[in-house]
Length: 77
Image (cartoon, rainbow, N blue to C red):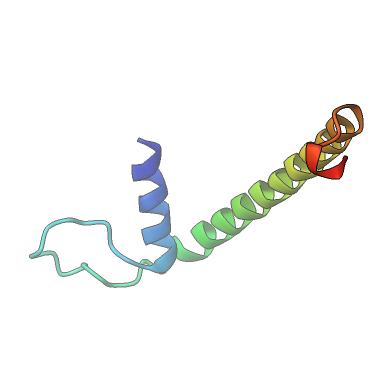
């Protein structure tokens, strides 16, 4: 379900019709009314995910640093 929603949003952001029928005249045409909103929403979501990922990496590195203080790696002995 999430994959389908993601694919639909990406297609809308890129201006690709999500209609699966080959006879559709709208296939491949721009969806101008939804593109700016979807692009902004995807950009904001990507930015938010990037910030969260950076925070997780920072916390992981801090935890790893503390772990190495308590249990030094054998190659540093």
